[in-house]
Length: 618
Ligand SMILES: Nc1ncnc2c1ncn2[C@@H]1O[C@H](COP(=O)(O)OP(=O)(O)OP(=O)(O)O)[C@@H](O)[C@H]1O
Image 1 (cartoon, rainbow, N blue to C red):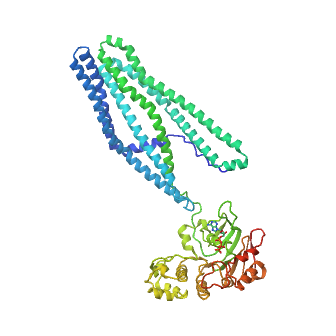
Image 2 (image 1 turned 90 degrees about the vertical axis):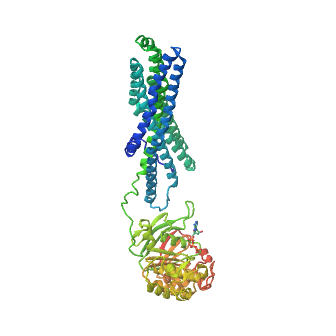
Image 3 (image 1 turned 45 degrees about the vertical axis):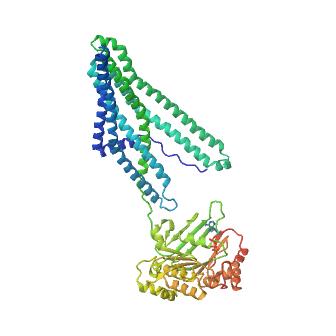
């Protein structure tokens, strides 16, 4: 059953700590400015309690409404001043987190590109979806980090302001505020690792459940077919129960948080109220009591609540996103390849047990094909139309990877040859080649730039292309692809491949539009050129002149010389009989029409029905 694997669990907040430390170290100046403006934003809180105390004592209780109004106005100004100073912190916060975001994005894209390259770009492309998801993680890191910085700084400074303010107006009340606060912070610190662990566990259980569900839905057909629904159901239910357990544990964390807020912020309020008569007896004014209560209510309580509830949640987001980014961004690139890419030594070819089908449920086009060609061999591939000749050409040149078996070129399996080396080592020329608008030289030397003109000229004459090149105005003449006949375009492409360094040349009916004489000239030119040539033959003459013939009938394959196949394989003899009587195959519209085409559909009726295999005729 096809199942996705569950990745390793998230275990630590190390990545987040590393990120926070690195970011602060990177932006020291901005961190100092942020600290300064946070301090300024906390300063009005320091004065606000005293202003309220004055408004009560010197204003309301002394029946002086103006003084009361003045005290209240100072209180309001303090609040406004605090808001303005808070506003000044944001640009510096951005100075810290925005460069971090840019850095992370750069790392993530580089890491993802490296991974794509590491997969050799053989089948998978650049993972754009992964980059989009990681980009969202980067945004999450930026937001969570900004939240953490603000929360922690503001907490430290506003709580500092509350303690100093209380000490300023009512020193006797300081222990009533500070002791429970310190206790609450102690409990918070002690429980923090367990809290973060439980949050991670709940998050992870949720992800596991989602992954299990997706995997089972994806494999539903398989599960029904194999009758394993009981097991699949058990797996999903286990994941549901695990998530339930994790959520319950997380709920206790939420309850503990409430207790910490009650201890750190609500108990000082209660203590001050209860101790108020005694404090007044010891010389504190009612205004001072109101001032201390205002510190606790309007400044301390929100700060403690935000710290205890906010830090936990945003630290979780930060640590999860940071861990994922650490994995993506610092991808070391392609793993050290134990068996690095190799260059084919020559044009020898070995196919071992090569099997290929166009899709998992399709009949294989080739099944267990074995073939061996020495460097310099000329092979003709023949068989009825649709039997798999072009597919063989694609497998030989590494355009298609085999489903089973392997193709070795010049001693190196094709999947071990680097893409650039492969383009140099082999050339596949199709029936309708690409000729582009450019000079004749550019067209001819496309696969071998810088080839000396005399070499080009020799090839041009050898292939019988001289007349065409002269008509176009020599090597510097311009090619208009539409102004060339199909045969002329084929000759240009054949000359291009002839000039290339490819040790293996595969011609997929690449001379179909040439007459028999021109075709023979081309063939002779390729015989003089060092290297292996595989021709998908459409004429009897091509098969007769080849060193070896690979005969495909859709079920079996035979390899041998033309004469040996003729003598020993009735199917080949039938095929040759059809050519000799001049029966033409489909698409037989070239200049050589009537020249004994090999791809006759009639021959298919003579297919052998024995098990697919590669038979060898002597
Ligand atoms: N891209 C493809 N997807 C699915 N099936 C394909 C694909 N290309 C080829 N086939 C099928 O694979 C089989 C072999 O095709 P292939 O082109 O290799 O035969 P061929 O012998 O070269 O034919 P022809 O002589 O007509 O060019 C045929 O049945 C064809 O329909």
